[in-house]
Image (tube, rainbow, N blue to C red; front, side):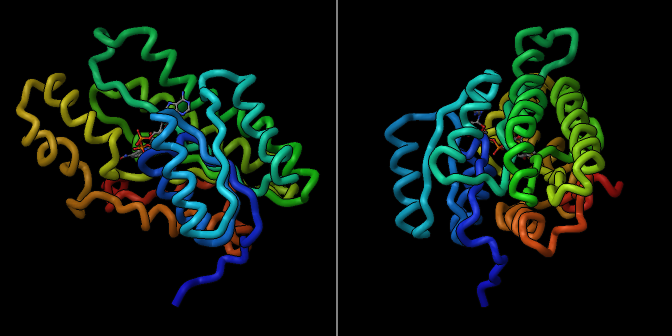
Length: 265
Ligand code: NAD
């Protein structure tokens, strides 16, 4: 039986939703009748194709805004676009992310800047722009897609780990600050999900560790997760739907692990 989360007609901005986790979460919200603004890079024809398909499949209104999440003024425009088009903003999912795997002493400084900008600073800029809108509505939901790497570290990912710890810290600060406003802020901390970001990493990890790619999956990626399975999109969508519904009203400032037991070890 389909669950009704009571969010039909709500409006969501999901950053980095042209691929992977963000795209899957956009689908889950649209299936509940949430109007979604997609964002992210990619082939314009493919993005338009995916936008149209999701709209037809769900009957929600699906729009796209191409803000580069390293550019504060474009991020502000993305948030304003929700109000221009739909007159409201109920849900902000800060999901856009990139990865670069290398030892710190070989890590290109421009990659550090990009990681911090896309993952951490964009979460600040988007939240900063969304909060006044949500305060005026008396309700809002900010969900930051952090990572197990927002709670524990792995080798050759120190900048990513730093950015994700930052996202978790920022989420806690927001949760406390907004606790009496009707706005909640939480971080979802997934373990490994088989997305394009991870598929690319398998090659990078093989180079950084000097081992063949087929060993990376077993010895590095799933080695971290006691259940030895990738996290599925639906497992993340379930947490998102809980958080954005009224059932999630008391959950705020939390870092919620969905990682097959990784951070319990
Ligand atoms: P992905 O590469 O499939 O998707 C990333 C999305 O971010 C894409 O839509 C891309 O276009 C967008 N993006 C990147 N740079 C951008 C920019 N400057 N401006 C706008 N959009 C930009 O990756 P994914 O695995 O789906 O990752 C999504 C989020 O989940 C990331 O924050 C990632 O760190 C996090 N995460 C992923 C995993 C995993 O195992 N895949 C685990 C934990 C956390």
